[in-house]
Length: 205
Ligand SMILES: *Cc1c(COP(=O)(O)O)cnc(C)c1O
Image 1 (cartoon, rainbow, N blue to C red):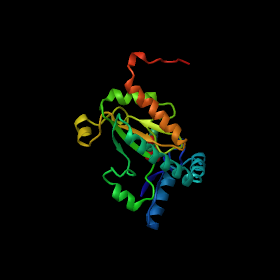
Image 2 (image 1 turned 90 degrees about the vertical axis):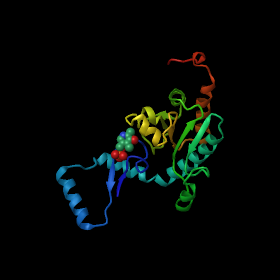
Image 3 (image 1 turned 120 degrees about the horizontal axis):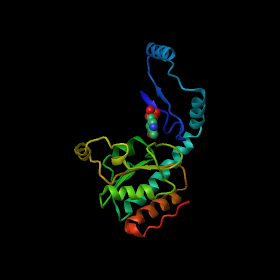
Image 4 (image 1 turned 135 degrees about the horizontal axis):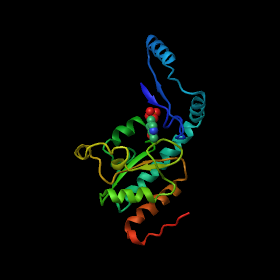
């Protein structure tokens, strides 16, 4: 198994680390040998950051899952929101599988807008204050991203449409902040859709 430690394991969006897990001693020895001669090891500082992150993994995930469930429920009721993709919702197509195999449903949510336009999504991802606009995920601070212009921008439009990735899709990575603060942040950003662009006041600081 190849697993990224950069996301939930390290948990603070400040480490690039990964691991390979095998169930054969000769293969493990070979991998260790190759790693030793190629020098592809984690720096001591990053190893320490990862260990320190793992110490709070259980607490972090509990909060991230609880926050995500509350936010997914809130989003599904919002009049501007079209679909919410979160396996904890009964409306998710694989909810029955998720319910069988997990007791909570993770910290990643995506949603699309009824008015499915790139410019609407861009307006929202630029309007949030607690949710920072960035591609990473799994950390203690909430992030959001617009896949069509960010992570998936190199995927041709027809492929994107076939895969069901909508223009207005926004991906949320839920952190450990207060759930109500996060919901209020999304609320004020979604409210921007009802305001004419010209009337927005920008405060430069
Ligand atoms: C996931 C991610 C990486 C790569 O980390 P891996 O451990 O290789 O998965 C790099 N940059 C960002 C912003 C990421 O989200």
